[in-house]
Length: 250
Image 1 (cartoon, one colour):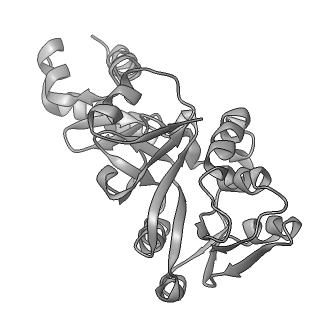
Image 2 (cartoon, helix red, strand yellow):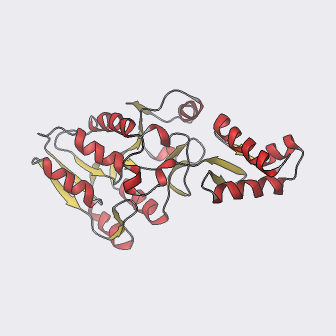
Image 3 (cartoon, one colour):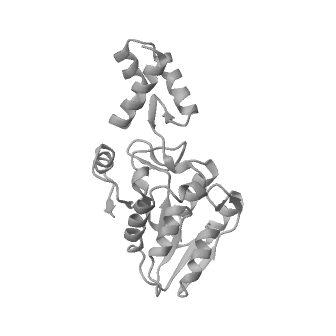
């Protein structure tokens, strides 16, 4: 089998099963383990798979920059946002992550809501200006332009004084094996710090994020209260349920 044919097979297997185990594919095709690993390296370099120990997982399309992500799965994000907004109780202190789904949550909040929102996203803070009853606290730090959020040591230190009822967490991948992932190490650290200072953490996961993975781990699935998603039933969602994840269907 030609290398191009092997790579096509690997991508087909990934779409079908949601994961590729390099040793299993090598045994099936009668080729060396190193040959399959080389194929996976090339696919990862092309941005087509996310390599993990022993194989690969589907790559998340949500790792594009902020401007590009605004046009990805817009209807899906609106559905997730509407369901997530229902979790925000009047009078609550809510940490709202950055990202395009979180921005949609702002639009879904009642205009007469009285609450406090803590965010490390200037974009989210500006959008909340349309909610006069919401007190907005912005966490400062280095601006990570890819996602339009602050992160880094100063931002993590600023989280120390936060005591929130709820954290609405944005990630780029939700996978039963890989857990919750994102595309930047510092951003992952900031998300962990925010989750540590909230009573409940719910994940905002539009359909394209379910069953996908990114390079940097944010949290394991059992560290959050659940996942808000509009993803259709299928193997990736079934695997989350089997892992004990609580789902809020949007």
